Image (cartoon, rainbow, N blue to C red):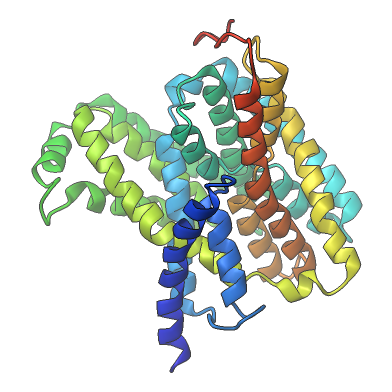
Length: 400
């Protein structure tokens, strides 16, 4: 009985300490707070100090955090801005990443099934991690930021489709049919949401914005729950439903006043990044199998191999979406941002380990590479982006 209260206290404590450490270290070098959340989870978890033990309750909260992370990613994508050339070329780049990842995964893995898991993991981009970085740097609305957002959208939504098609336990044919059913329902909901002004929604949002009613937040939770439940009922990955819920909510809120949208977005940021998302990342560290990673030199060697493969498999194809006239420094930054991946890697490896289709050592190596990518690549990308000199900012249409 003592372990459960200890876990309940330690996980919020670790989540509390992470931004403090990030701000202190940030005076010397800027490191995403997610890195500290995962590392603190590893240190306090069973692999090292043993202060925190995974429980069913924390796992449920972590699942909610993962769903909320993808909801936020879906809600923050401005599809009107990335539509057209950026999204088309980003989609092409992702398809090349998936093909290359599966081929290399099959070469590295002991069997083709494990290779598919590795390939999907290597084809991902952590859009939910990149958006706050781009927003903090004032890059979201620049052509460079639009290109990275399109790459991230393809690198997050594409793997979700691949998971639903190849890792759902169904044959690809029936899985595709189920996926089409879900897509029809989700697209119909988004289309209906875009057809009207929804004044009653906006009135309730405004009326309860600063009261105990909090209609906007309750509506978000309902939309998230319905689409996640629908995806699970259909045998699809829940993250697909979470992502679609974010897109739907953005459409519903588009008619609200800028002031109300800003307040709602702040509240959602607080709910997601102040509560459930940190629990997901801390729990990822707690459940990280450090023993399996250190079990043999060959497994440990997979970490730098997977890190390099993220650059080759996911980073280089990201160049397809580079804005016209991008400098060499911007192209290097795009490669690094494209290769930044973690949430999808965690989700894919969990599925593989749970179904005994992926070894715990390989899963730990993939997650370890994802953690290093989040630690290193955005930092290096920003240094490349900020180092460009004598180059004019690109116009919104991608021309110099």
